[in-house]
Image (cartoon, rainbow, N blue to C red; front, top):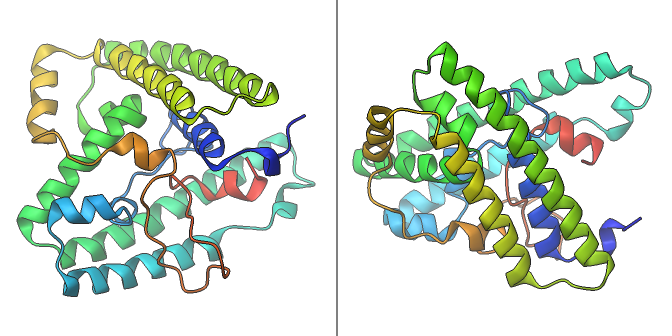
Length: 262
């Protein structure tokens, strides 16, 4: 068994990315990745692309600090799950995921008030691009009106994605256990798997729906999303974060998963 302390930051980021991206079958799924405006604006290159000025940055920092504080306060202790039945755990995870989503929605609303209309539009375009790369099935469900047949096909795609993500997770852990921790190689494997997942999901929708997605995404973003998700340039806003810690999670996942240590 590999201990968490033995894993490098890039390996942990890759495993978290895999686990959250593969749990996208429901908006309240365990491990559902929430790519929110607040999360996006905690990424320095995103601010640079949006041309956020000093006054906006200060106000955004305050919103994000409050958002992170609320997330921590809403996160139960791991012991909360200890004596629960599987069904009770599922119910608690769903409740916590709903609370986390509501916290993010409030923060996103506050952030929107601080941005110029053009900045807000561009931010939402960038977020859609990120969702299509990281959680493509959820992105399609959130953005498009899907037919019953398309929904059925997406459920099948989800099952295949979950299998691929499981195989990738096993391969990465095998690499680590054998002493191979090549950041570039792990990043390549994750990128290729996520790209394949996006292609499978997009194959379900019509050409007209694809054209709509293209319009909603705007121009390709300049931000190197993969470098950031694999441990790149994130800001540290929380004054209450322990001294010496400058890292924040690579993605905003449900409080239930974090409480269970998953």
